[in-house]
Image (tube, helix red, strand yellow):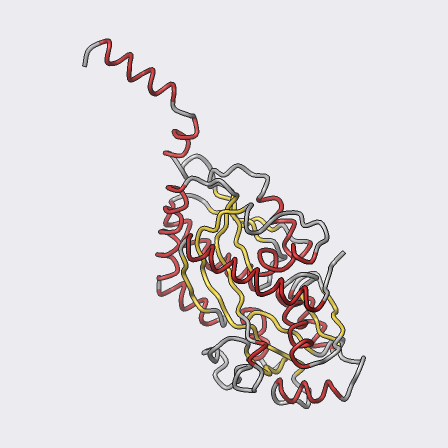
Length: 324
């Protein structure tokens, strides 16, 4: 190669954006921050902890879970809209802040369909409908019949305004014609504690949150909201089996980044997540906690999230719900 050719190559390299070189080294430069928008102990935290080590091994870079709880996950989601799309800050998303909570605001802090990059879905699962272990109802149909005899006296708990646990309770109100009062908590853990203590009578939350309490006998499962029975709770009927198909719902967990992430980076991450979700150890851990491993790539995951937004915004409009 002569001197002239070397100078031409040097000029071409100088013209390339710095991001190209930084991207080529990804993720060697620094640890990857995985934001979780809820306190430790909930279903989304369980999913994050389940994939943290396998993803770290696959990428050969440290993955650090960073808790940013508050505002039904919207504080964490809002932060993600302000970071560089370089792959070093990601978030494990779920239904609440990415399909429900912003639509309850008169001035939403972000647009879930325009300000994020949907990389890969990790899992989804039915919600478990639970009450105190000593409640007389044996299933959700009997609970609804009981609640109709207690107008104005029945409370349902949630992990916060705008969470999936909130909207699931409102869905029961709508479909069953009840007037249960919503009692929001700062996360699933305190909601479970007050349900066991009798301050509330119903909670509809992820299997990862409620299944251990049901198995230990501290709570009673009345139904599961998915299309199939939960393998972790095989004796608990689905809402469809109970004649309540309008209450069907599933929650999702998936990896999300800020808008504008390079396509090559998104595809690399999605490919690694697919391998993680397919591993026997991860599948066993998720299934043991009542969650179903479910991989969707960028295109399919984006379409699924849009459909979830459409579903929950209809309920919000029909119930005239708002959080401010």
